[in-house]
Picture 1: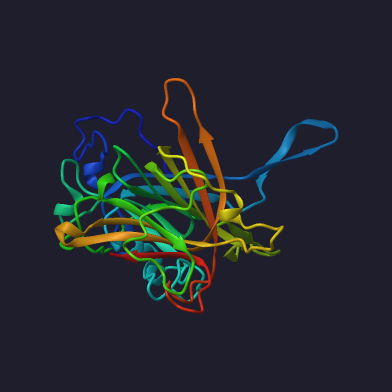
Picture 2 (picture 1 turned 30 degrees about the horizontal axis):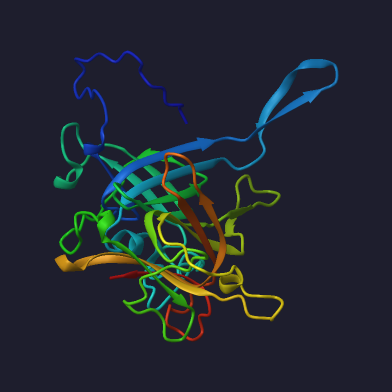
Length: 357
């Protein structure tokens, strides 16, 4: 196979000469489904090599590939509904019936591994407004999701970032893809659409009146930002006789973490043992159901709910200094299960769930 080289001084008068590529001409797909409201896409690869040296010779004999190459891709999109989450997670985006890992941990699911593509339109043409694209696109086949996060902050549009890995990357025809579907989704969620709810974990679940968060020492806080993240580490399994891996499996256990930063107002009498339990009295370490509710219900469109069930308090960090508002960082975590059961199921004692609202 001939090695492709790039012309560094291509004649601008050449037919079809392209000056550059910008976001207008590109679109991201998981399988054949368009990922909506994408803000950035990055991809790279690394090739692990080992120097082979010997006695009697200063220079190397060879520099060989001894491990599988790793292709990395990450992309960020603005939140609105669960259309993207469904394309990436399948049943894992249906929190009423299943947990986050339902399809990512199911080798029979089409979401267990997917082909990710960055399509390219002709220069000066919106990709989403044209059905014919003859240009070659970037393809990352057999991509495994390795992390997923959701963030929001005062003054910023809430967004999500996805990281994935593969062992191959190519530039080729992206094939037939599905045009973006935006009729039932808001243009974008805003910081004012984000609210927080929590209550001690019970069979009753959360209600709309539970508009608070488990905090020690303060009865009034003003949330400035949140981050929910899940790392899904993968182990590459190789064997003698094969150059590349034959499996890439999830390394368990997996935790979902939530970090909330806020400005504090009223302090209140409380004890650490109120939210982490008391060994002296053998009081249990309480768990909390916590929702980050991202919705535009007043406009009759879908939002997204990030739900922790039976989350534990991991810590508080309080900061106060001259010239700044006193602030607090709240950290919570929960172990993510196999996702076989939904949020309200009695068989699900803890976990992380997504839901369309």
